[in-house]
Length: 114
Length: 116
Image (cartoon, rainbow over all chains, first blue to last red; front, side, top):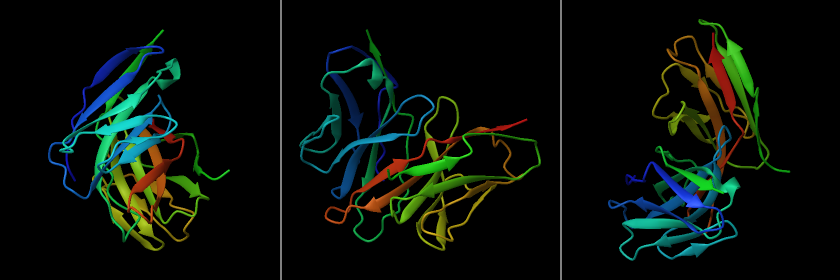
């Protein structure tokens, strides 16, 4: 699996957009980019994933560069409840099995300030 | 509501004792996972199972054991051979997104084990 690099921490003002970057320069063509977040002492929560097109859901938007070597998770209007560790993970898609070695790094600690 | 239930939420044990953490899911997911998290660090994969009666070691399997006798259940035993068992343990499950092959994990709330 491709390695990902994220800044260890970021700050954002409440109500503003939070843009969390992730570098995955060794990504291969069949690898998805996944984003999860973990609020303190809870289990991680899935946010969004994508292959090469930009994606949006009710939680966030995912922007993947054309060369797929980096991506940005956008929380359009951050709230205090968005304070969490955000994990960017790259993993190959598999049509044959549902289990895989999904590895979480140390992520980015996002702090949303009032 | 479908989800993953981990128990107990908090557990204390003495050194040298084995302890079993429970993980049950009603999501009809084929795959289940166990992760360990130490303070201020990311998640590390202990074991995972793609199907009943089959499981594979993750990155830090030494000192742990699992079983997968039922699709819904994937208990983790922390044995006395695990040198530093105090940690936050997370169970997850996933199903294959049939169209794309993407693999989204759903996590439980975690079990915090403290060795006294």
